[in-house]
Length: 262
Image (cartoon, rainbow, N blue to C red; front, side):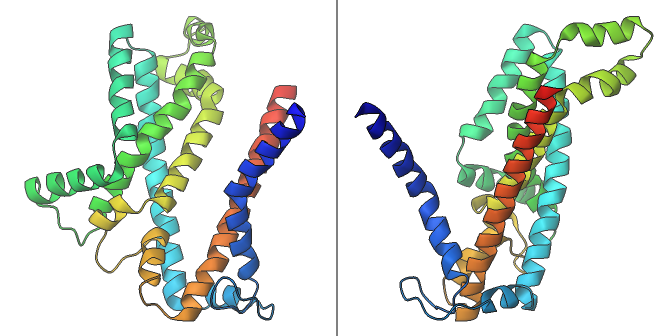
């Protein structure tokens, strides 16, 4: 009885998490204009998604922004984690503490802070993408740090020291020994940064140019009066993102098991 209740609870949690997404994916293959009324099955939503110029521009801009933010955040977060790891205990503790503040802090506070600092103090024009890039990088970098630091702690410190003893310079030992050892954490941090950039709404809203939209801001605006075919095409976009996430997770798990077997 107890085991049955445990299984029931697990399936209930899974249904709560994934059933709304699956329902949305199902309706993306229909010509229904609202959830609840099933009409004919159709691929019109997917055709609209990849033929509507506004949607194509929005997806291109979102992906380019996510890629740029992920690269910068991965570099900063990885360098910060390596620097903190090889620092004294007190310095490392201080850096880890300060890294946790942006994570716990609300996105709306980060968005306001970035606007006040760079628009009011440094007079950076909001019509450029620099403000948006800075805001999202500030959001993503701490998460990259958290992904890389555990890998550094699991790494055998004697490997780096052995490389130095065998004639490597500190920089060469870093790229030949340390970076390969922590590469899974770096990749995980990169993917986390991509996800956060795609998902962010508050910081993007406060820092983006008026004529630019990411997926998150476009979806919110679309619910306020966009054409019906645009709204339903976003169902198709949600389904595609969900499938891509599943594929990435499966590939990552398979890759992780292969590395463990080796």
